[in-house]
Image (cartoon, rainbow, N blue to C red; front, side, top):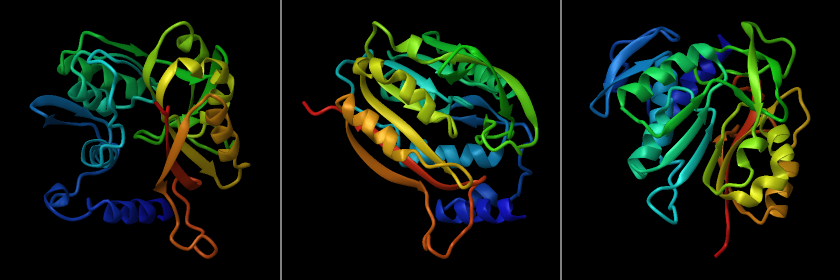
Amino acid sequence: MKLKKILVRSLVRLGLKSGKTYEKPFPRFTPTEMVFMGKPFYIHDISSFYLGKKEIFHWGVYKFQAENDEPYIIDCGANLGMSIIYFKKLYPKASITAFEADDYIFSFLEKNIKSFQYNDVELVNNAVWNKEEELSFFAEGGAGGRLEVLGKEKNIKTVKATRLKNWLKNKKIDFLKIDIEGAESEVIDDCKDELKNVEKIFIEYHSFNAKEQNLHRILMILHMAGFRYHIKEAFTRQFPFIDKDLNVEMDLQLNIFGYRDK
């Protein structure tokens, strides 16, 4: 019930609770299909879809300006593929490598990329991590799947992980997106020597209530790699001294934008 209250509060904050979208309530985590941007679109969780649509297409959280019309983008945590569709809307000639850990979510990603007929998008059914190995993964069923970090998650499956650092070597990455639900600190720390190849970076930072915070380490790595950073809230509490509500065990989520001064 607590998670449901938090979700409803988030939907209200995003302007998604009322209006046409929710005239007929649709159960969460129920696969469905709709037309999105003129194409068939396959959805695993209706709430994740509308939250993603608001953040990506209405707020433009990934909007960036590339130096050419054929940027190379690495998308870590591609989920349904809405970020890929947005990138291709910005830059139709963009080449994209996209990672998604959960094989169930990945099946929707594959269908959506096929529906949009993107031939220059490479899909990789791996988690990104700091080494090549198999990991325990919390399969949330929507946009909240993550590597097991608290030891008390349910619906655990095993996923393959790839070392992101190896994908950053000896190439220019125009835009690197990292939204991997809590694994960002370990991945960024491992990649720090290769961030010189990245022009712009987006990181969603996740602070778990029972875990040590490491935002300062991420920001220091970005600073040492030559980035100037900007931070915006993704999930915060209005009265942090009093309000103890959590968003899927997280007490803070921030969007970090890293770019280089010219």
